[in-house]
Structures are given as C-alpha cells and as structure tokens.
Amino acid sequence: MKKIIITGAANGIGRATVEKSIEQGYFVIAVDKDAVGLASLQKAYGPDALEVHHADFSDPRTIKGFIPALYERHSTIYALINNAGLYHGKSVYLYSDEEIEEIMNVNVKALIYLSKDFAEREMKHEAPRCIVNISSVAGEVGSCDALYGATKAAVIGLTKANAWNFAPFVRVNAVSPALIHDTAIYDTIPAYRRDEYARQEILKDPIRPGGVADVILLFISEATRHITGKVIPVDNGAYPR
Image 1 (spheres, helix red, strand yellow):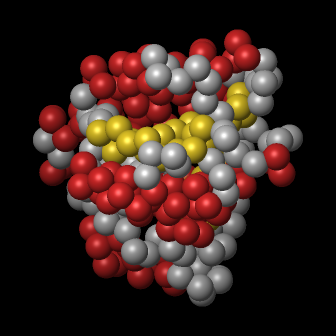
Image 2 (image 1 turned 30 degrees about the horizontal axis):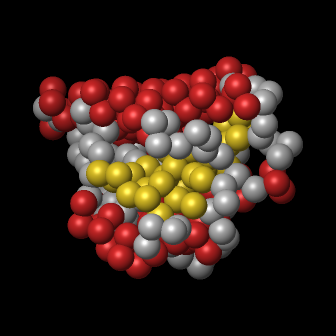
C-alpha cells in the first residue's frame, strides 16, 4: 500500500483528496491544524487507512521539523500533496506584520521545507515519487488579495524549479484551481470577484473539491509518469493560457 502525505487534509480540497485517495487504495498521512476535522476523518476511516497529525505550518519550527519527525515512523513515502494554505481576501493595506509572516510561512515556506525534506529522503530510493502543489488561478492572473496572489505565484515558480531539482526520481507538478464551491475560502472571496470568476467560466458545472481531488490523484498516478514541472488549471476554462 503506497503512503501519501496530504496537508490541509481536514476540509475542502484536502478532505476530498483524502477520501478519494483511500478509495483508490492509498494509505494517507493527513495533516492539518484543525484537530476536530482530523478526528472526524480518523473516526470515518480508522488506523488501517489513515494516520493523522495535528500541525500548524505558521510555526517555523513545525515547518522545519515535520518531515524529519515523520520519517522516524515511516521508511518511505510515495507522494507529498502540499494543499495547506491561507486566504484572507483583503487588501494588502489591511495585513498586519504578523499576518504577512503567517501567510508566507503557510503558503510558501512550508512548501519549501516539506518538499526538499521529502525529496532528500526519497531520491535515495531511485524509484518514482511525486509532489503535487496546490496553487491557484490567483497566482497566474492576480488576486484582490495581493499576498495570496503573490504566494500562489511563488508556488508555481517553486513547482517548476523543483521539477528540475528533484529529477529524475521525484516528479513535481501543480494544480491551479479557480472558483471552488463548498470550501471555507468560497465565502471569504469578495462577491464581485466570485461573479467575475463565474462570468468567465465556459463550462457551467460548478467546481467542487472532489473535482480538484480527481486531478491531484491523476498527477500521482502512472498515467502522468511522463509529466513534471507542469501547472494544470481546474477552472472551467475561465482563463485560457
């Protein structure tokens, strides 16, 4: 049974990815700061399919120590899905210094440390491994939340660079969602921005977490074994590029 790490696992895209991963036969190491959400996952799936870790990636010590501690329990892990992220949906002028530090830690620094620490341990096996980063259309076309847009653009750059850094054994790709319904972020996106996303969609079936999870799981499958360094939008065709 292949083991995979999913951060931001308790809700939204992360939770949908946990559920679909278990359905496909993966053993999931689920990570989140939402202890209640993790407990509900553990109750639903049990220890044979799921291991949960309460972790807050706004803390630099957690970022730097998480993967080393995890490998004290596991000798090898097949994939890392970097899904944890923050979105505030407000002007750059309204961010406090603490909030700037927090979003940089969660959305960028956590990916840097988790990815390099994972790759360093797995490349020695000289066998196929995967990293999937969750970016956003905001990282490609901009955002009303400048800090969010900037961090998601950084995720895209990190994805492409690490595809080179970790080759030939660890593939690194990104998924770039647009307007995703049934998530905590959805209600915090300003209404005018939601309307703009919806107006530009050329496919009209609302995107839900499970639709993004399907693409994430495609990226860790054999079907994409020849693909690395790529960013796949999940946006109902809203932003042709």
